[in-house]
Length: 518
Image 1 (cartoon, helix red, strand yellow):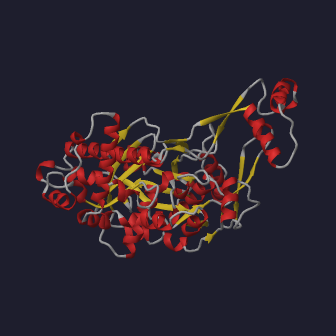
Image 2 (cartoon, rainbow, N blue to C red; image 1 turned 90 degrees about the horizontal axis):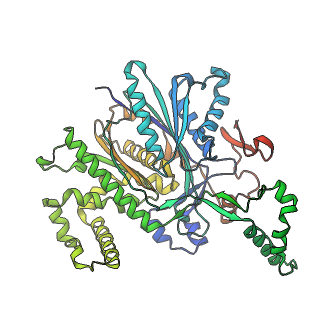
Image 3 (cartoon, helix red, strand yellow; image 1 turned 180 degrees about the vertical axis):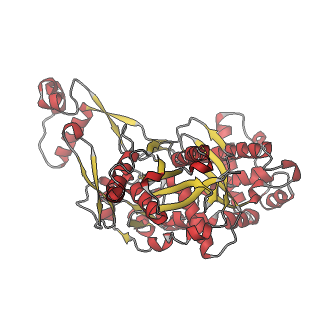
């Protein structure tokens, strides 16, 4: 059987970070809840010269150089992101432009000309979709073709200042090398999927009226001490048809509203947690059914499939998310078994829907009771032991970097491998379970088999060592970076790609220019 999978992983994270202690003091928040309750220690913050494209390109460069890959060998480079830089031009093309700059002196100006690139977007699961697609493409070529694909993930997880999601920010980019006979993790073609069209987290195109813009400007002028007469807004709106602003500005051609896209999402945190939980549980059921259908697993022999996974790698919007979300799958697999009887002896029976009113309010109360019961499962000795052995190592990097959106699952994978490398764990030929999630909402459950050569790959990562060299920033710097008003880079770029310019006029308005900085 021909094996296809992940041969190596590279990651790039910003050199700047905000310490969670400083964040808690800045927002008058409970540090104990953020750190002990959610597992947060720091969040990575992009510098002025960094964006989705630079973080992805820097990671790909690390991957290419470390593995001695010629650009002409790379047939596909698919980017998973929900932080795209343009509504039409793929961010992957900016990454390709930077890579061409970097390698053209050695391999020629056309070295990436035949590389297929595209962006794939489905909130946080876009990079898993890119992985799924690229695995299929590599496998279809056959072992003799030796196709090489790269999956890129890059995001800036950014929320409104002082919002309920602000503490779950983070940023970073990475790249997966996909090929036959991988040295790290082979991935069988068996995927559990769950898709449901919900609005738990999204980034809509929002409309702003011209009257609203004028009203805000007038209000700012009054707050600054300017004397503004009453009725000025209506008079300005009436004057618009003859004005230069109408003819040449953003409200030209009689448009009364403009669409505005923001990186900050519209979201419902509690609802999103339920969607995450439901989607992963359903995708796991789908995976288990397919595993039984093709002979990978037999439910009749009494084995628990998740016990066959030496490690479980999950999407982590915050470090302890998996700890809170996986009890649903843990319970689903074990109900009726002797091990589940031990759990029930600790926390009792789950809440029955028959104990609640058959009304919308009753259903809500039942769901709240189930949430409480799942929290109870996470505190039992059986689940704590399961979590410590299979999930905990994946949390460590997330705690220090924060949310990477599409890259969070792969950050957890690197965190697990590097932690196991340090402790000399016997992972050869062991199975990993992987659970990706993206709001909107979709989950994919799949598994990987660890190669006997995994140590030679992980030995070159030094991820945690590199994190130790980052620079902490204060509140003023953080908020200026968040608002996009900081004057120049906080830390001068070196040995990396950097954003140089964003064109402001003509047919290249909005076009971005990048350069490699030695």
